[in-house]
Image (tube, rainbow, N blue to C red; front, side, top):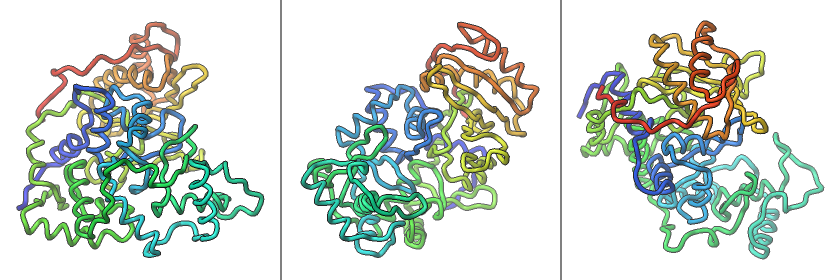
Length: 422
């Protein structure tokens, strides 16, 4: 079955599937956080902390009541675990068995790790943890030569290898440092540990991706999952022939979708609700997809030499009106409870500038609260002519006004009049 969608419909389908902007939610906040992780399939972990780290940021954008302690609680309650998706991530324990194909491939040598195996060191590390209990890399002294790009300790490499092949897990972190323990001491009782067949694994990748993203192509479903694309492509065709999937044509591109996906298009999208996204948000982690669907060409510039940066060290994509309309380079000065907007850059296609700035001013209150900031300072905008207008809005929303800075109340809940059917 083939259906044709407009680009605007495809974007709406992707956003509703990603559940951003979020809808009002009932029940305990921690349950909403777990529901977000289970729906999305994973939340990428990142170490950059110029603002709240990416995993917290992504969850906050799906659950406005999110607090970092909820993720800690879910780890303690063994509802989520840390492993590898396309990158380091938190995953729902519900899906634990589907982490086993990668672990099995590494343990059997079918797939290579980025470190070489050091069997002797791995045995020593495993024995110490079995005897002493959970340990961190710093608990292993090292006086010899460090090797590799990051000059990694041999014990650290052994820990990572044992973790990746499934002998160790990370039950928690301390000050963001990984704590390692034996897998059998971390797994919850009754968890399914059977290795899925290749077809089961491919179906899991396909249905999980489409549930969370609305529509997709084989390359997107196998993104950075070594050796899986041929299996995913073959299974997609089998599922399409069996009527379990449909084809969607957007322009000259074909995408796959679940049959239920089109029902989402009748649901409202909160177009007037602006969201400030993480560069590692599930919506836009695949840059090629975002350029194709949203016309948004994004590059994170923290790895770019400063003189060559166009937008800033850690620019945050901004979603509004069903589109990605801007990027905002931010940094928190925690000792001063101050959020710096180093550079706000609008996309050239933005026409409703005033409405966008009003929506941004409204969302900044919640964003500052999320980042534990009470004051804000605006430095640069592109185009430059919008800076005075935005500064007026920022000052008008401040309870304590000063040039270039403001304090904001928390953002009120989204109300029903912000929804539209387009």
